Length: 239
Image (cartoon, rainbow, N blue to C red; front, side):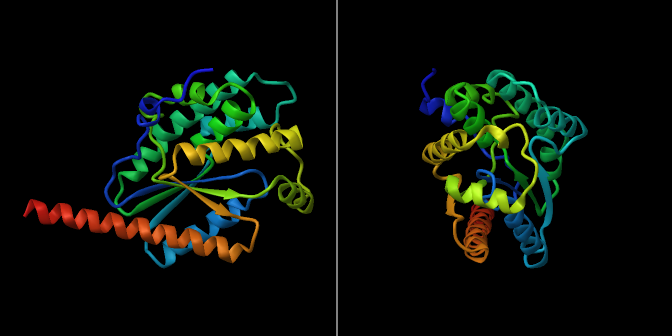
């Protein structure tokens, strides 16, 4: 497998649209992504007056949604390399068709349910394709654009299993892979946090929903305030 170099990691950056932000949520099944996304969207719209769009991966475009259905509902094994390129194709279309256009509108926040980290963790680490190999697939514009902040909701495999049983929903292509696969996912997400510590915020999602929501809102407040202060300093320097 290829080496994960500093040069490769430094090729990824967040979109530059002043006043707008790109966020993502990551975690294994049962981590509570959907609930926390809904709570954050409500807070940002009602308390901060942001225009908020929620997207999902794969999906978010007509092409992406068809691809999502084809992958998650398939009964045939797909190779890790094919999976990685399929998700990258969906992501590229989502960036071009939706994300970049919408972020150009001032005061916009896009929240994505899964993004590049899922590809690295699922296909790169857990399916054995290689972390550097998946990052290399994305080492081209616009795929090298990553969120300003990623919330990694960390739970253990046992908690995931318990929550999935309570939910009692049919398992898709990845969810049906079993406990050993989930253990690899947890290790993979911890690795991504080590590789991108300034972008990925790891939160203990084993506890109450309210405690997780509070941590997310605090992180958002800090990012928004830091951005405003930086913008103000830039304007002061130009005067």
